[in-house]
Length: 271
Image (cartoon, rainbow, N blue to C red):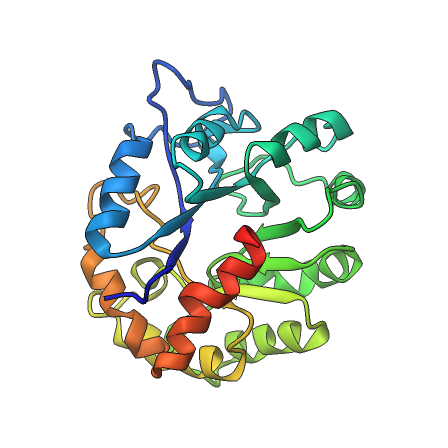
């Protein structure tokens, strides 16, 4: 069981589509994944709180995420996707609604354009205490480094920048990611998504072998989440209980698990 106060720091809600329609630019159209479904899963898995991350299919309309936070009775926070032209008043309203960061998506299969200059501009205007979440694949890490170096707020890297975990803990992708982490002390990462990153399948042994040393070496900068309801994996979703079983394999001591699941996400989202 996760420790008391544990946070699922990467999950999503979708729809219901009749209330919260998807963006006209959406690259995928998932089924409804409501707050009630998310909170039932949270309770079943033994977690206490959620960080709900706005997914690309809802575009910059964060209404579904804000609705879920409002229904959480104080047990959820969120990460928004915004138009870089968003006003200070709109950012303040998102803060009041429980948002604590914004997400920049650089996966070409999910977004048409990623205007780095405009992203930098909006990052400079974020409310105090917010951060930027960045989603990218390992093959563009070097290309993104100048952009990330220029961001004036803390960073969170989704799914460790999708390294090839079959290379092992000392493979080129992990070495490049460690160089990123070593470049500044305010970069956090989500040790998440073995189901996406490990082609060997459940029980995802390559993921465990590659990621455990990263968590051990950067214990104050790691986060964890289910990625529920597993966007784009509707035909073969992972067993969420098996994802929880991965936690002691990548955070091998009680102290590491407390940092991964309680201390780090609480500091970033709930303090």
